[in-house]
Length: 251
Image: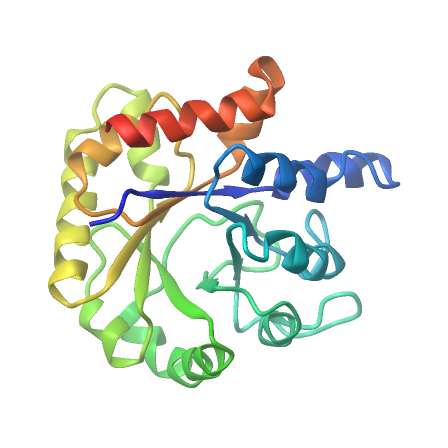
């Protein structure tokens, strides 16, 4: 099994830029710095209200990532297109990401906070999964630890799951991560038994990532943004990315 890949989510750089207007700080420059020191990918989660990463940013990231790391676009495949946001499928057609992570977030959510209800959502997802795969993208579905119906992920053609790690991170901070870790580990094992790959993300940090990777088997990719950029304010971006890579290597 290959080492876990680190995909850095650069949304927070765009949040800071958009709070002032103009072009600075530049999320593309941040992505370049992350790739330069060894991150294996860049994640973005454009939302219809354009409050952080925009469709234009996503398209500009394509040549920057080419040959250096995977581009992973997250988003709600059911969110309608509107001015400034072409819809997730159309954006994938233009940017041609290596991976698309489908997430059931509503327009008004501050951040993703739950996975798909696979029994309810699988039939709606199936034709969209097929369209994303036809573009050459690997498709991952955002799921809760302990989610029922993982077999439906494979049935509709998705190749990976991304375990929502927010509850684990909260439990870890409170000193009671055991049950949450066990649910994540069981979900990963079930996915692997079905032939699915396993990603993970949300509120992973230097404080909890090592414990997570030691307990959860065969995680192929972690997507980290909020904590990483918060930590980078103090330690510097390139140094912080190196910290994460070292954590992964020793977990």
